Image (cartoon, chains in turn green, orange):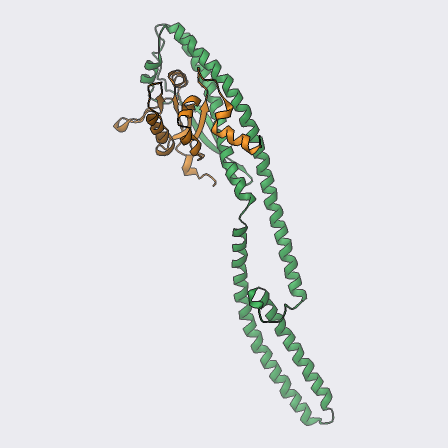
Amino acid sequence: MSGAVGREAVFPTRQSLGLMKNKLKGAEIGHSLLKRKSEALTKRFRDITRRIDEAKQKMGRVMQIAAFSLAEVSYAVGGDIGYQIQESAKQARFRVRTKQENISGVLLPTFESYTQEGVNDFGLTGLGKGGQQIQRCRETYARAVETLVELASLQTAFLILDEVIKVVNRRDINSELDELDREEFYRLKKVSGKKKRDVAAADAEILAARQKAEQEQAENPKEPAATATAIFAKEEETTDVLGEQEDNDVIF
Amino acid sequence: MAASAAMYKERQFLAVIGDEDSVTGLLLAGIGHVTEPPDSQRNFLVVDSKTETSEIERAFQNFTQERKDIAVLLINQHIAERIRHSVDAFADPFPAVLEIPSKDHPYDPEKDSVLKRVRRLFGE
């Protein structure tokens, strides 16, 4: 638009009014869509933060119960089994897999726990005594770990959403502007091509009109004023057309 | 930063850094895994009062940065407290770092890195 410097003001045509109206409408729609996306994400985000808070409290309780059942095991076995457990751990029985959930175009991974069948590292643990307690302890801890995995997916979703919401909210006005620029550049090229063609056509027209007028003048010299006005009108019309084309150029 | 599938497709294990009781319990649940012999690595670290902070730090880096098969890292809160700087600085979505309570140290929501962020967002 800086191209307008030193030229006359933008021609207030209906065409450019229409263009402007369309642009405004487009901008409003884009804004409201982004806003809706941001709201959907924020809602989800608040939901998640609340659940994280709850899950963390729950985790505290669950881990306490689990620790207690481990104490029972040490009591029943009558010694420390920690070392034995650490040495016999080989293959993970308890694993997680990740799935994706789509929230307004944002992919949130969620962890899902599953047990690998046929893996049992602790077949011999507690064979002497305390087997029952160990079994119970394993179940308690497995439940605790499930809670932890749930919490982990909430937490991951939280971290990703936090980032995405930040991006959406300041959503890159820049990237939108870039897009507009590219579009306008293409238009500009088109317009200048058309303008060249139109100028050539208009020149030919003016030339034809002049020749015709001269002819008429030669044939009918009594009405010079009327033909002059006609030529003037004709010329004004053509410049008008040119002016409009220039408008396009000036604005975009 | 939508997480790409490659970022977590291979992640299927849990890792733990904790005191002996926590690790034992979690191993009983079946999360323990040792990788194939050539350079076998455990996915758990037992920390006691004699463990150097640098060792915890190294394990934390190993589980969070180097290994690509860990989905969730569980760490006792009192141990996370010793390497608080690293835990706070770690902001990637994978692996999820989870602070858990231990038998001797009840859970304190005030110290949790993630919960601190949650609280801050709600302006509390």
